[in-house]
Image 1 (spheres, one colour):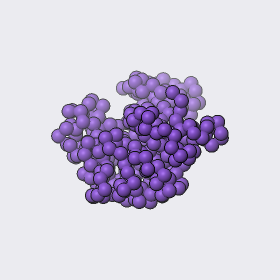
Image 2 (cartoon, helix red, strand yellow; image 1 turned 90 degrees about the vertical axis):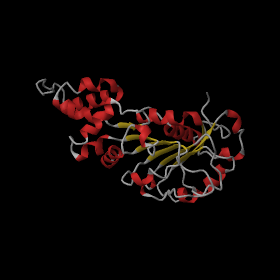
Image 3 (cartoon, rainbow, N blue to C red; image 1 turned 45 degrees about the vertical axis):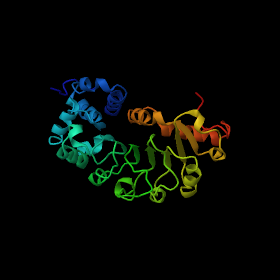
Image 4 (spheres, rainbow, N blue to C red; image 1 turned 180 degrees about the horizontal axis):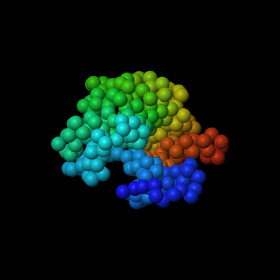
Length: 287
């Protein structure tokens, strides 16, 4: 049982910052930190739930089982403030996730403060989008077959509230590239807050995207290998940064843990290129 029997010997704000920083940098220490004192427990506990993943594992692991339990034992604002990074995997396949729809609905209705969302799906995302109307992420990555790449818009809708606060959007599907005729580009161009976009696309797409999204500050092009882009003229635009498609999801995970992600690397690269520190014909960090 935690208590405040151990008196504070540092200014309260400094002590609070030390424990919170320790929790962020050394996540495995959080269970131990929770036992130091009641005040420390209050500071540190939210970090246990800053990152939540619902995946296709057969059974919910112990951490997430506790999470469902604590949904009924914490104030309504606790998880709204605590959870900032959320991963959803194949949520239309209930029998494979180990999660029932009631658990998922409760989680999504509670964790409305998510700013960074990763959705991995092997099927088009139509069943999921209506389930998350209360989420307003600023950073979103759609991976796999989450969004149809056909020339038919089908029922997927980038105009739903889920997408309306996005500043950073990644569309990653290495089995088939996006193309100019893809019917969702106009809707994406209508996302008024969007400043950064990452896609794995046909070679005629970059010029088209830059024409319909003139306010982009960063434009990441994914590639499978170095041979796919051999300095075409369109890569001279200083906003373009090239990254391996295989790094996309891994980059999201490290970013959620506080390490520089693809957007940090892209922004730094673009800033240095604009200052003339990187040649105009260079569009990726040297290996």
